[in-house]
Length: 288
Image 1: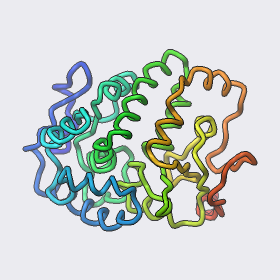
Image 2: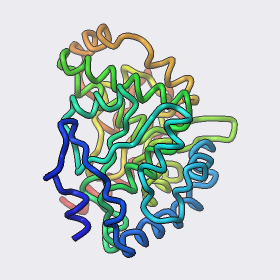
Image 3: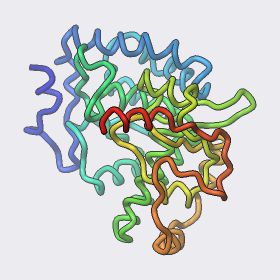
Image 4: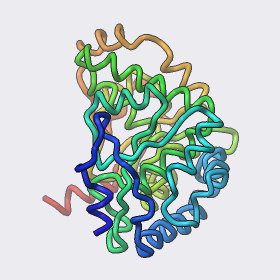
């Protein structure tokens, strides 16, 4: 029962980590990883930030089955001081932030089945490792992730976790970047999903708006469907600079501001693409 092995909490440690049990994966589970990687890598070409696929190659995670976290950590730790730690599922917020603040990325180690390649209710190892880990080889992005973890530990004491969660969602999970070559994906929720990869860049429906920290922290997001808005940064250095300040006064200012719907467009936004909203409108009609 490999799925249960990789979700077993019997040997969970105080920091909610477990052993990956790499030897317990079945050939079918390794085959699932290979199918996912072999269809995603070509799709991401010219769609994802170039660092991503270069780091997928450096970590040798595209065709050999579910990666061994120990092998990944040899490369990661040597390059940026990060490691991947196995967890059975979602962990408490404080634990998650502590891991990030100490350059440990918590990754689930179970993998979806072949009959659910395109939909999961919760992240699996393909999302967590293929989607998140490659960019931890980038020094600037690696620093951003650590600072996010430190910010999360502070936000818990300030009652601002929802604000900070929106920043994670719209950057780490669903962020886009802009360069001379056009818009590119860097968010793991897009990079690990065939449908999101196409929708985020090609579909006319979603808004694509220049990143603004306070605007992002005010904006709700979708957890059950494609995003209505994507925020676009001008590279990782710009992201780090935009989020380098103390968030405490920002949280105070936002207490007087109303939250924004996922598809809202403000007069103050720098709109790179005003979405038609057609996709979500059609979904609403279908369920009415």
